[in-house]
Length: 284
Image 1 (tube, rainbow, N blue to C red):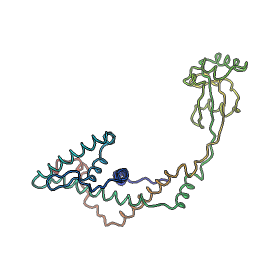
Image 2: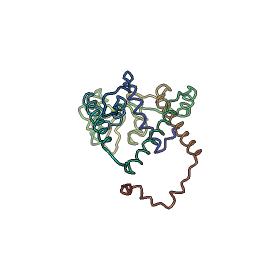
Image 3: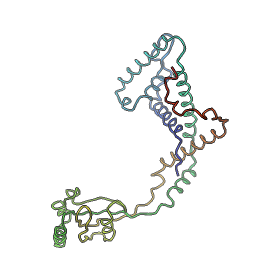
Image 4: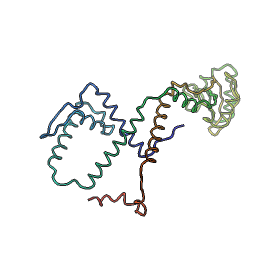
């Protein structure tokens, strides 16, 4: 179902999501609160929030007092340096500012779509499209005892037929990693095990023990503990995922719509050496 966002729009979307989250976490604080001035320039809580949201994740988890002081120091220093600067900004800086404004503004346009309320009928339709044709699949819970030779496997079978406890024998004799856990493999579906093992499991009745089964790992004696049918998840279980998919599709459709409607002329790119995008020195 999901139609992924294009490369540039996905980047813009990811970049803009951090700010609303951060704002919600500090909703009791007025972003216009001035925390410092450098000459006539005010530095506000809002500036600090935006600076925090732009930090790499490993820095965002630092203690609040460390972050607060560090961000404030940085903004003060940057402001002082900005005021000290004279002359015209280099072309690379002007171009970067233009790209930043373009990216952030585009991100706000995408957010408008992503945050719009959804009709329940649309969510239900997305669920039906995604899961109505999903087939129910069988899952198996089995245990096994793995030994190196057929003779050892036959001896285990005889021991089990004599009334020995399967889990106890597995802990004592199985060479596989599940041995200490009584041979328990947990739940698995078709395709999860090698074909010979899977075929033996499927053929078993619950509680039955298999004859020795040879695979690339050695000889197995298997017991089937339980079976179940894996059904499609409920709508509520996948609601968040579906709603995100719907919003992403709508955002992508908007991107395509406004791009198609815009007067775009790419003729200037014809014949340009594609390597020019790496020639940063040209901006100096």
